[in-house]
Figure 1 (cartoon, rainbow, N blue to C red):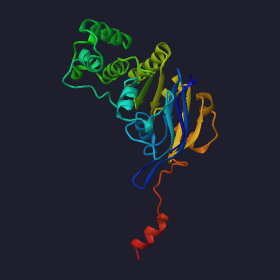
Figure 2 (figure 1 turned 45 degrees about the horizontal axis):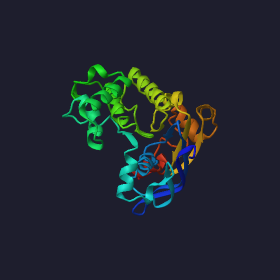
Figure 3 (figure 1 turned 30 degrees about the vertical axis):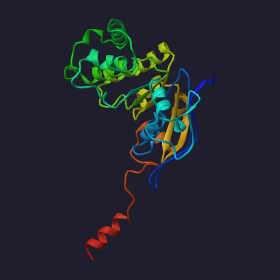
Figure 4 (figure 1 turned 180 degrees about the horizontal axis):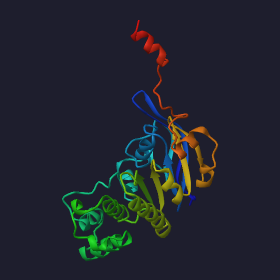
Length: 267
């Protein structure tokens, strides 16, 4: 068995004639938390969709646990997805179900376990995220951070080997943000799974990830450990890490010199 749970080589993807990913190489080892970062529109979410099998590569290799995701038929993809957990942006809980039923949903849908065992498993997952006492609440009664934690409990309900987190820190206050970051790290270590986090939050991510990939214009611009990323002298990485207004990603949209517009206006 390979140490790499996710192996991506020479991955290309395009929507119609518009290239999005242009030769991505990426690996995620078992037991790691891997962050995928980059500015909006760089291809992070598309990569997320490719790993989950929602779309298929145009070219290149993408393997999860040794399986070629792009080559799986519907049944094979279904079986693989049962071994993945997904945390959608903002949680995406079922609004008409209680916290308990949200977490129980996958267990009821994909297993034949008796209800008494499902109850024990759901409370165990909720206890792991600190919300066993909230099992009877509705999503409308939860704070943003609590909803995100319930979504994590749902993502780990079937004991997956891989969890994909889509912007898990978006819209959270500093306390909730720290809680979610620590929870991702702790669950990865405790359950021995692999976590891939698509995020813009550089500071929180660098506290808890093992490895980082920066994507720019559909290619891996930089990669490394958190320490290597912080020390990077690459202009794009430096701008991203320090939140600088101008750099390789410019503040101004490309245009003619401003003085030219002024002259035209007075011509």
